[in-house]
Image (cartoon, rainbow, N blue to C red; front, side):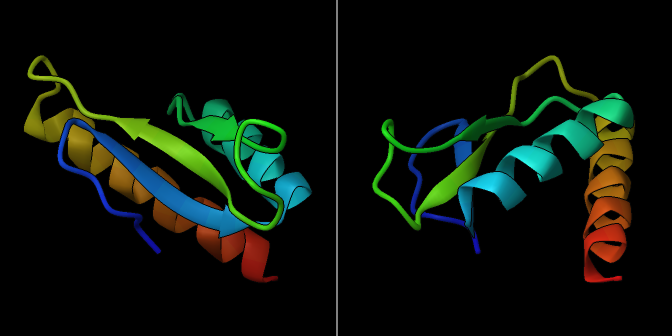
Length: 78
């Protein structure tokens, strides 16, 4: 789930630290950088991906990133 945000950084809460870092790495393999944040930076059980949106991102960039998130999510379900 997306955490609360009032800026260009969106926290996607994953929970488990190992799963979060694996998700981050899988996205990176698809050329999408979403930094994994885990304890001790955040409390245990609240590991998250730090998604940063920039004005220079095009609609194509966003669609490609969303597709990568969907693909990785499906990979992790299996």
